[in-house]
Image (cartoon, rainbow, N blue to C red):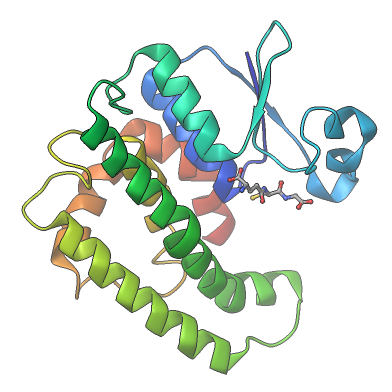
Length: 212
Ligand SMILES: N[C@@H](CCC(=O)N[C@@H](CS)C(=O)NCC(=O)O)C(=O)O
């Protein structure tokens, strides 16, 4: 099995974290966005969007969209990280995975873009009004996450799930985005717990080095 990835792609990082967590034998193939190879006919036949991550099985089955890949790999491995035998537990994981996709990850990535990526890549001056708005949005989202984690070790209950992996991989970049966790004690405690996991550390390491 192969995973087409990019070292600092936030969408690929969460899939790699799951692969490490499950100890799966997957060949990670790093792509280079700047080379144009993601838009080559060969790569577009794997993912018509021309984006990573993409999973390719040895029999030619392919799958794109990071959260779909995560669900597929967890079900295939029979892992409780995606509790398909319990509809409510599964729905809670889906709920937080969707929230992560639509709200949490894009907001944190926008703060990172304005504060860190723009200066790093010479993309112009950070837009202070955008920063003010996204930092405020991020604070509201972190409050939601904090409430969700109150009295719990993991976001969907007592057991770690795919949603924790997605959320933790994004939360790993909060400090780089200049967002502090002090006002969110449940998030801070969960974040420490998640960052102790070798699988998460290994997956986020390239991004941590990039922003260091
Ligand atoms: N919704 C997709 C997003 C995939 C995506 O945007 N990947 C980025 C890397 S983080 C990419 O490959 N960008 C290359 C490009 O747009 O040319 C997912 O969750 O997998």
